[in-house]
Image 1 (cartoon, rainbow, N blue to C red):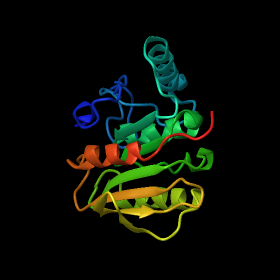
Image 2 (cartoon, one colour; image 1 turned 180 degrees about the vertical axis):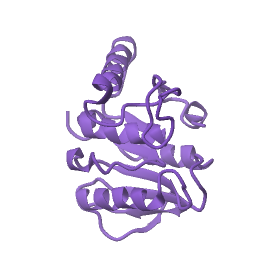
Image 3 (cartoon, one colour; image 1 turned 60 degrees about the vertical axis):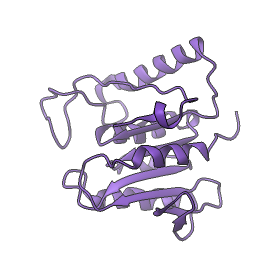
Length: 196
């Protein structure tokens, strides 16, 4: 689903796998892998896992600390928003797919966002995703949306803070859109974290 090594060969790509976790919308008994749903949930085991993975990578590789990104689909997209809320200072930009973050919005700080959403998503309702997108547009100080110069099917909301929002809205359902990885790589390449 995420062919980033082919799309961005010079990037170090890490595919983290969550443990079996009770789902909010599906899998209430937690028989399938997932990610913690909120700050403090599951003893913050997934945030601790992220911290350990990042520390290990920094010890073993030359990691450009200004170019660390997160993406994920569905529950992974929700965890991307959770990472933003809990570890936002680490990341240059975020690109969740099929996710919403109503309980995390107050914890977010301005950061470039690409959000991929299906208009007919029966699981993570499009209206929920739109509410999250609109909240981030406001947080990021964005203006009116225009066609993105990297892909005319996407909309960019330019930001006075240098933290634009790009939306890749498709007519599909909850499935990960086949064009999303290439769009995410284009987006990530445009954004490096400012400051230390």
